[in-house]
Image 1 (cartoon, rainbow, N blue to C red):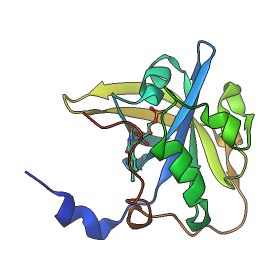
Image 2 (cartoon, rainbow, N blue to C red):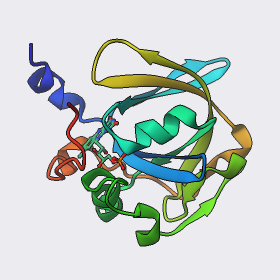
Image 3 (cartoon, helix red, strand yellow):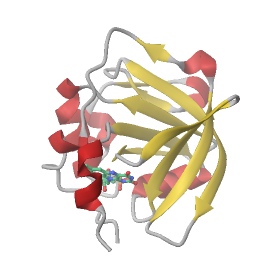
Length: 162
Ligand SMILES: Cc1cc2nc3c(=O)[nH]c(=O)nc-3n(C[C@H](O)[C@H](O)[C@H](O)COP(=O)(O)O)c2cc1C
């Protein structure tokens, strides 16, 4: 079954998820994500098991979430079109350690850190990660015009999903 055509009008906003563990760090472009609880606040991202980011995230306790602006296409290309297996993405962008040592992309003016609460394997190529946003990590400067899927589909994924 192919749902892609039915879902295309939703045109989700794109984010970059980052993480660090055991002396390694990585991050990838993510289209599968959502707020999934209000009280207490929860946030979910789905990571492809093929990605290097997934392997680092598995061992990490926290993840960085960066909401991308329309002007962030280059950053989306770096994190979605290359893999940490071949490229040190952090050598090619501005970043700094954030809450709990999570590498945070300082050019993204809308970002926060989530504490990983659970991971769920539902037998597909992506695994669900649910986290609790750390309130003190929230940075939201200026307005955001989200970079949406339609403007990122030109990026060939650095890792195939299967
Ligand atoms: C438009 C677009 C959406 C993507 N959405 C996701 C996603 O929701 N989850 C995910 O794990 N990877 C997603 N990817 C794929 C990764 O961002 C990509 O394979 C990346 O190169 C993996 O890098 P890594 O191996 O360093 O983790 C997407 C890629 C693109 C181009």
